[in-house]
Image 1 (cartoon, one colour):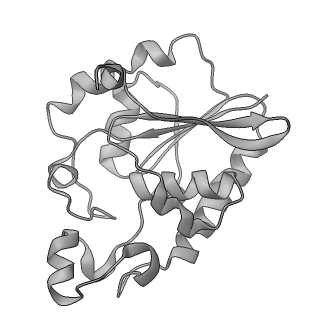
Image 2: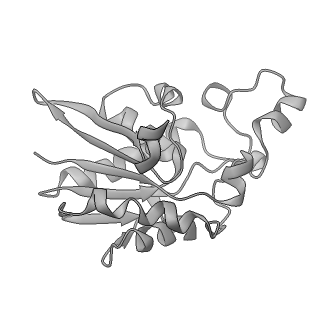
Length: 192
């Protein structure tokens, strides 16, 4: 049965500080390289009929560091466009809107949750049309929404799926039902 591997890009300066990083095209931090190359053994022995990456450089850098030589860019894997809140932290936004929640309140000047979920469904349709495993290398919120869509949950439920940088999650099936087979895995997670 097909599995879809969700791989979140490595750490950036903005992910480290909690700034919303949508379509701003920033690179990985230099120290992200060792964490990403530590994921390679977990990918070894698995074949992928399709590897898709967000076109943003942090995802493309991650894709290359993981050893994927052949991959395609897919705009559907770009992160949520945070509009006016791009580059701001939750605490900075809550100075103006004390109880703001991305998932229920959205972002002015950016995408709605429904628009991001439509992109998630588009990339899932593309993956389902393939034989064999597929890998998506992308960003925290879009990958969380993809997981919600895969499991047929409302996209807003993705707010309950924590997803760290430089991690692997796997979507699959159990008894013909779409499930999350593995979530937020990283090599050093066993030490936590």
